[in-house]
Amino acid sequence: MSSGPGLASSAVPQAENGALRGVTALVLAGGFGTRLRPAVGDTPKALAPVGGRPFLHYLLRYLSSHGVQDVVIGTGYGAEQIRTYCGDGAPWGLRVRYSHEAAPLGTGGAIKQAEGLVTSERLLVMNGDSLVRADLDEVLAFHEQRAALGTIVLVRVPERARFGSVALREDGAIAGFAEKAAEGTGWISAGVYLLEREVLADIPEGRQTSVEHEVFPRFVGRGLYGFTCPGEFLDIGTPDAYAAAQAFVPAWFGDPGNEQAERAVRG
Image (cartoon, rainbow, N blue to C red; front, side, top):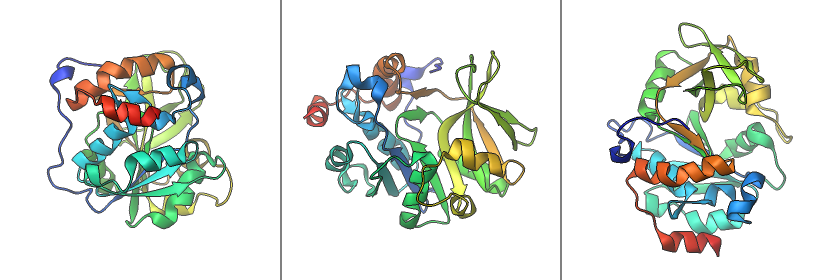
């Protein structure tokens, strides 16, 4: 996670033109969260309590604040808990539907399985265990200006060695990926993608597939771009990052937390 001045007073970015109103968003929330088990027990990672609320609450608020109305949640482990908590999405002003993986399909497979629920010509994808302070309206404008087939939101980290890094051309086109990057600063994926249907059509059906390792490399030089975001980024996939999120996320959203929601998720 990176941080900057004025974090505690920063508000959730608000949509100005509602450009994303007609775009379906897919939240990938099927992960096991094995590394978080000591902290959250059997709770699905996307429902891990952060500042007294399930992490997924903040993701849905983030999407709603940008004018998104139609959300599909990709579920796997803990699917019923997620359905019980999110329901039809009405508390967030959203329509929420579900795409369930009976067995893990990977990020690409989960996207492919949800394809039939997508009502728009492009799909916004977000990982269910990470957040980035990106203006999604700016991401969409960047995507459209370049007639991109796919846009990946990128963040710069001070130490890229433990991440897969991304190489960019001057015009923002992605030049390639490095799974085990050299030491030093670099651009990494923030787990937010804007994808045209041509990309979805390229994902094989009915098998486990990684969109990052198998699908995106095939689109290098074919309309795949990286939107570089200067904002804060975190994922809650490790105990250290999860602990840091307890202060970071509620401060970002100006949300003091809700003990009742946390108790409901813990059962």
